[in-house]
Length: 138
Image 1 (cartoon, rainbow, N blue to C red):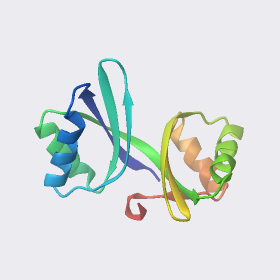
Image 2 (cartoon, one colour):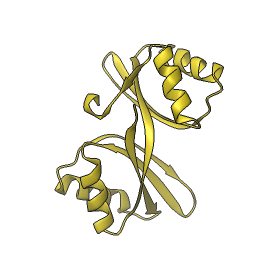
Image 3 (cartoon, helix red, strand yellow):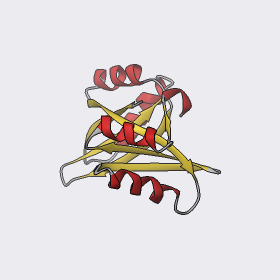
Image 4 (spheres, helix red, strand yellow):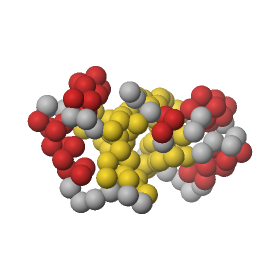
């Protein structure tokens, strides 16, 4: 199963990330995870949020460029080597990870991955008994 990730394109100037967080807060939308990547001209804020449709509408109404992407969120123990074991399984099946980001809390870590082949990635994770999360388990 996949979850929806928002990618918000931001000009590289002071306050743009704050504008996004204010809009989300005003609309009672929680950010479960996020990652920021930048180039010289703009940044890409990738977000996993509590209400995707509401977030997309609110951000687009405020003139932000937003796209949706299917990603995989998996859970693994928050101990050394657990992510490495999962990455090894994916590499063995020739699954390339375009990007990933993670967050950990206590004994559990959640990893967001964008694989080159989403169906094969999900199939591999299922075959390997990995814990793939849906939006309700974030």
